[in-house]
Image (cartoon, rainbow, N blue to C red; front, side, top):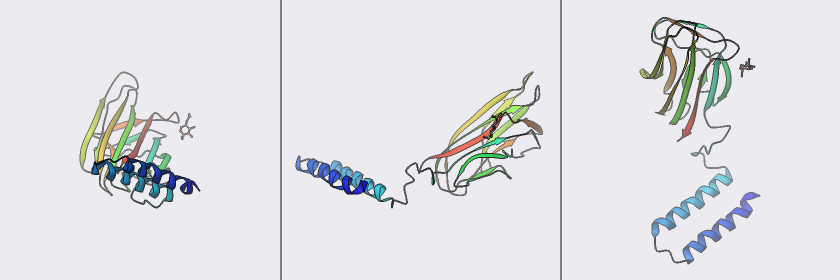
Length: 183
Ligand SMILES: *[C@@H]1O[C@H](CO)[C@@H](O)[C@H](O)[C@H]1NC(C)=O
């Protein structure tokens, strides 16, 4: 239905631009490109473009609902899945595996036991990309943020550097999220 109205309308705009006598081939090409992309989007047949679609855009959030004891390089297993579009996040391993290549945003907030040390990093495959080092007199929290260009199958995790305990409870103090920004 929408298409029926949009195509003639867009064709008119395009024609108008051409008739105006623009000699700039680049502008004409980009207008044509816009028109083609719009039509493909309306038809829903542009498989290469995720177009911020709530069924296809990889996006997840998971919460740690109870404390977890961690050894050296242990992965925090955020056990309660809140969102998991494309099922990239696995709550039993704590590992996010990119279902599609692209630019992703990740963040994780962690809380210490009261007065105890906690050192965790966001790992991109085998690389510690960013970390936090916490030890205060009470519960301490910190958030890690990273934007990463992933290939399909690349893994992102939150791991401890040493033997620590990460705190959380039903108030959802510790969590891990990520989503695709662009392909
Ligand atoms: C913690 O998060 C879970 C999942 O979103 C939710 O069901 C629960 O109510 C939250 N806890 C509190 C105390 O709001």
